[in-house]
Picture 1: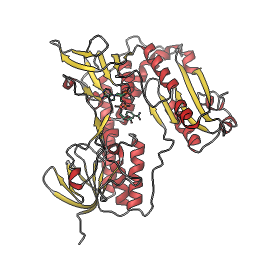
Picture 2 (picture 1 turned 90 degrees about the vertical axis):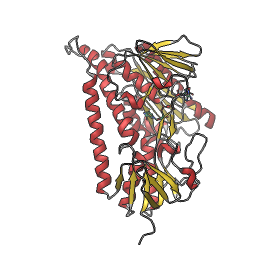
Picture 3 (picture 1 turned 180 degrees about the horizontal axis):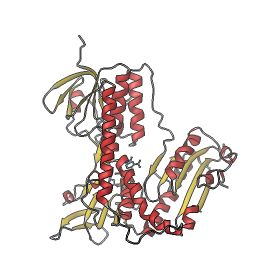
Picture 4 (picture 1 turned 45 degrees about the vertical axis):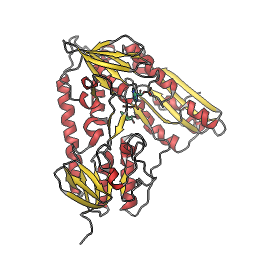
Length: 449
Ligand code: NDP
């Protein structure tokens, strides 16, 4: 008789938990996964996937205008039907949710559609009261949007609710100027909303290269998105007509129809019972883990956003895979966090890998920076005054490319391929020796002088 009900009990069936559960089961472990909401987690259900589909949908606003310069007769009364897009996006989410569920099932993972909380180093309790034991527990519960505690905050929504809006609000205020704020600003603006971003500092997309984020700011302003900086939320008041009056420091109050909080995300560890197993948490409530994803309790591991390392789906997936291969596959594996490419699906999108210019100067002293500031061919014919900017940062002594940053159409698609070269430690010369693929935007990468 086995000593425990399962070898592995996973809490949370998002990107990291699902990968860990599936691969551990494939390696022969007896695995159950508890999910209190829907299999797929943030990325599939209310994050990357539906967001990217909205980004595609939003782009048609400009494409339809540009099409006329390319000879297409586009009726002036072209209308956007939010309900149609919403329905299609949500049914795509259902499809992927189904695919994730059946993959787990086909690998023999038991899915328990209930909230589970830890009751000790080897035990959990389900919402229904059932107690379960497992040799190991993997916490993969992710994170949730942080909502400021100002008066009236309950009148605001988060990115979770945007996908379920009945209609596109006319005036939207987005709090924050990070990934989610800039992505939804672009989407809602293209759908016809008047968007104002407010941020507590005057920096958008902290962590990205300064020239690239400045370019996004300039283009966003040109499109009509407003920004208010150094503004702290004071409160939200609901008016008799249903509109919201937002008070903030340093600026006049603003009347809008919808407030979206995009002020970071907090690990989902509240009430999870981790203290019963002696799992230490950091001051943000995240679970610190070692390079093998093990927490301060040896039988409890954690992967993904709940560890607050790098909050990106592909990283959570790698962590889940590394956990499973190390613990159940006899193949010790650690995630390499160096040179992780990332993108912001703003309008236009931006992407980067490696060190920003400022980081490289700090770390390496002297660096060489190459820029390409150009208008994409399509934008020229479309009369769209929107310039792309590519930046390559190289170590002065070795010529090695240590950072690549870009903004412009398809930047994430182009950067993913170029990230292979940066990760491989190639030099600027290696880029130069590669013949340009003409005409393309990506050819700028090998033509930088
Ligand atoms: P970000 O960390 O990107 O941005 C948070 C923003 O909120 C910043 O502008 C920050 O200001 C501001 N902020 C933070 N705390 C407070 C506070 N207490 N009061 C007021 N403002 C505050 O978070 P997001 O919510 O946009 O996204 C969360 C994470 O999800 C990202 O870090 C990213 O890892 C991931 N994500 C990735 C995406 C992608 O890969 N494309 C898309 C969406 C999310 P300041 O910087 O000025 O201090």
